[in-house]
Amino acid sequence: MLEPMESILAAGRLDHGRITIVPKPCSIAEIVETCSARQESIWRSHRFLLELDRIPQTIYGDRPALDQVFGNLFSNAVKYAPESPNVHVTGWQEGESVCITVRDEGIGIDADDLPKMFQRYFRARSSTGIAGTGIGLNLVKQIVELHGGTIQVASSRGNGTTVTLRIPIGAETSDEMRVATG
Image (cartoon, rainbow, N blue to C red; front, side):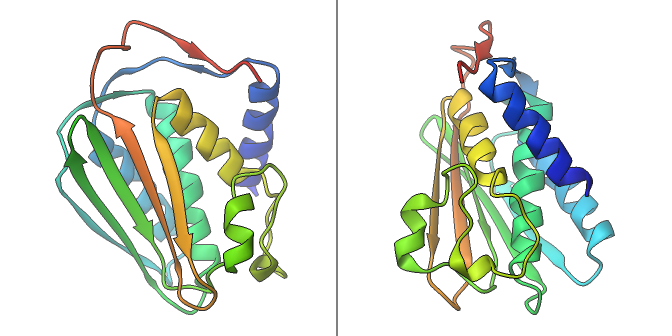
């Protein structure tokens, strides 16, 4: 119940230009490990298989915002894969970006729903009967973009889903605060 409420509140702050991203040095591996441990304590049926040894030790990012990103992605990976306990999280460095994929082996998404996945309030047809607000992925995308990054989703019905984030590592914008303009 807490995660949907946090997403709704954060979406409201985005709408009113009140989300501020303040990039500071942080360990994205630590954020991923903390979020995965939190999900494993909530959903004892699932385990997160982390491969993070190829990511940089430090990036410039807003830790609370990135915590919200991974918390949402990990929660989705569990919710939409109730019968498949493994969630694969893989990270690597690509040029000046850190890339992280979150892959589940769950119900997947219909091909014609994929282009709409980041629209606010959109819920894929495959999500029928699964609790959610349709706000989470929209919020995740906006936070990733405020970091100067990108997000993609690949999926097919019955074959799981892979979400890939690319977030700049560098400090060139670390002195700036990025504010959502709604």
